Image (tube, rainbow, N blue to C red; front, side):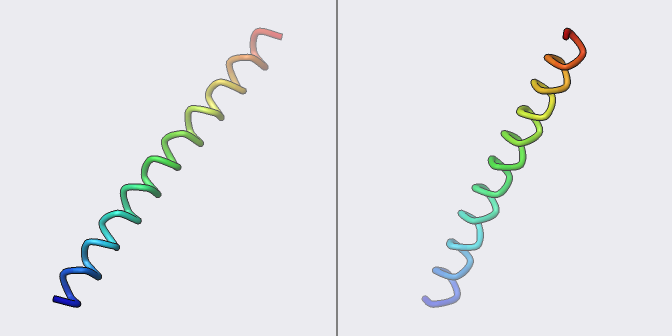
Length: 38
């Protein structure tokens, strides 16, 4: 059972990290676009 809980926690962390990375990329793109406009 411990192995399953560890795998579940790892899966959740991976998903959260992926979402954070996507948000970071979007933020950078937004900044780049705003910088180009200015």
